Every structure is written in structure tokens, then in C-alpha cells.
Image (cartoon, rainbow, N blue to C red; front, side, top):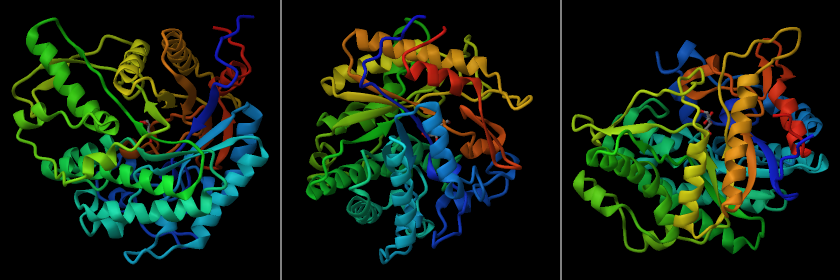
Length: 442
Ligand code: GCO
């Protein structure tokens, strides 16, 4: 049998996020988040779905940890729900919320699985949104208070820390497109949020370094480096604009390389930067996490707000219409190596939604198996080319609440029957078990 030659200490994990899997939204003192509010808005979510029950992990975490152990995972990336921890504007701490995550980490530890905790995977407490959300600079202070509390109580239990998950989504989808919570369509607020999220990250990093904790800490981006549709100059320009707004505006300040000023000027965007902010954002990181799903090609289009648009795709697509482009991951890894001076990288999410069918307790999701394999091959190629890729996390352990798509899209390597909450590992889960041990059939 052919072995995939990933290093012995390459870290194999799977990922979820609090609002997508936990349920229990009103238990043990949790207060509402922007997603509780947004899911209540008519027409916001497919099927009118919400996160009230999700995959019920809040009550089933022991079962889920046992499942991960059975599948051979070495790390679990989960997120901490801010509205479980800090329950009002005054910063009141909820010990029961902290206890849930301490219990989860202990369970993982006993199973020999590393805890990889994300501080912010989009569930902003509603009371902060009522005060302006990420468009308000004061939210960064609230984030630091929250982070400090979490570091203090969970510090001894967490093996790797992530400050933010995909600030691109929080700012652009939440405040410009309005298709994610809080559902606002206001370009100025969106760009103010970009800077405030970057700043919140930097402030939390500073706070963490004061704690004396030694677990590595980083952040997670969902970079996009669209290909130009043709070699025409305008299309090359379109790709550069897209890269600037999708990737560089988040990545480069982390490495002291500033914002893409020319682009900002060209589109009359002024970020609310104050003296000293850029130094805070540029705190040294231990690693970067990359979430990767697809890559697009773009053409110049003067009529669209940022002068580019995606062109039709030719590849196989997932059931969200996302094209499967494994080599795009390779391009991103190479770009990150160049910009960051070859910092450690983790693939913190990768996976796909397809029309899974549960038949006699089994799901033969071979499209997903191929998808994962092809992306692992891209990682391997990047490693061979000298990029420091240190681990891979499948998105997701479980089928779950896929944001504006509700439960209509299944990303799990484990199928969830939402009626009974019973879990059924799909073929891709068994494939990963083999791969983690060093074997692969493909
Ligand atoms: C993401 C999100 C996940 C999504 C996944 C699939 O970080 O984009 O972390 O929550 O479910 O990306 O769309």
C-alpha cells in the first residue's frame, strides 16, 4: 500500500464552530448573539433554519470526542462562544460558560486529542452589536476583556489558540453584503470593521503574550487569490484588486507591511487607523491558519463596485456551486510563504458540501473523498516546494448549521440525522482514519 509521506508530527484534525454545532442557545447563562437575531429575520436563512439545536454538541461533546478518538484525530478545532462567557456590557463573566469549555478540553485531553480553540467564529454578543458591533472601535476593547478572561481560565487546557476566524466574512458578509449576521449593507461600516477586527486580533495577541502561556497562537484567514480570466492587462488588474481586498488587507498588516494603500485611495476608502494601531496589528504570530474551499477566475468589470467579477467556472462543483480547484490551495500556500517569510501554516478548514445520502447507516461520499485527497496532494506538493505546512483540519467533523444555507448543506465527514441527533461516519471519515495512519488508497 502506498503511504502518503507527511511528516510524523504533521497535525491531523477536524474543525467545527460554536454556533454551527452547539445548540443550547439559552442554557447555562448564554446570552443572545447576532446569529440568534439574524436567523430570526424573515428570509435571511434558507428554510428559516437557526442554531437552536444544531448538532447538539453542547450535550453530546463526550460522544463526539469518543468519535474523534475512534477516527484517529490528533486535534479538534472548536470555537468558544463569546456570549456564553461575557454576558453583558459591563463585562460580567459567566463561570458556567467557561466550565463547558474546560470540560470539553479535559475530555479531549483524556482522549489524547489536542484542543485548538478559536476565540471568535462570528457569534458576537447581541449587546455589542446594539452598540455598533465591529464598526465601533469599542468592540475591540470588549474583545480584549473577553480574550483575557478566556486565556486566564482556559490557558492551562488549550494547546493552540486562534484569535479570529475569517475576518473577511465578519466584515464583508456581515456589514457590506448583509448575507451574514448582523445583516447590514453599508460599505463604510464594512471597511471600518476590517480595521477593527485586525486591531482586535493584535490587541488580543498583546494580551496573550502577557499571560506567560506558551501554547502557539495565530489567526485564521480565508485568503483568495483569483486567477485573471485572460492575459489582458485589465484582467490582470482585476485579479490584483481582488487579491488586495480579499487577502492583502488582512494578511499584510500582520507582517508590518501595511494596508494596500494605492487600492484604498483608488476606491476612496479610508480606514479608521489611529496612531500606533499598525504596530499593534503586527504582533509576531506563531502560525497562520488558512481556510480554503475554492478559487475563481476574475475579469475586469467597471460596473461592479470594486471593478472585478467572477467568470463562469468549468470545474466540477460542490452542491453550493463552488468549483473544485486543488491547485488554488497550492498557489495560496506559495503566496503565504513569500509574504510571511515562511511562517508555520495550518490548513484550518477544507472540505465540501455535497448531496449525501444515508443508506443503511452508510454514506458513500466519494466526491468528498476525492476532494480531500486532491487538496492533501496540493499540501504535499507545497511542502515539497519548501512551504511550512504543519497540519490539516477537515471541515467539518459534523454536518452542521451552514450559516445562510441553514441545514441544507452538509459539510460533515460524519452525517448527522437531525431528527435523532445520531452520528454516522461517512466514507470520508474512514478514509481520513487511514490517511492519518499513513495509508491512502487513492
Ligand atoms: C468558514 C467557516 C465555516 C463554514 C465553512 C463552509 O470559516 O467559512 O469557518 O464556518 O461552515 O467555511 O462554508
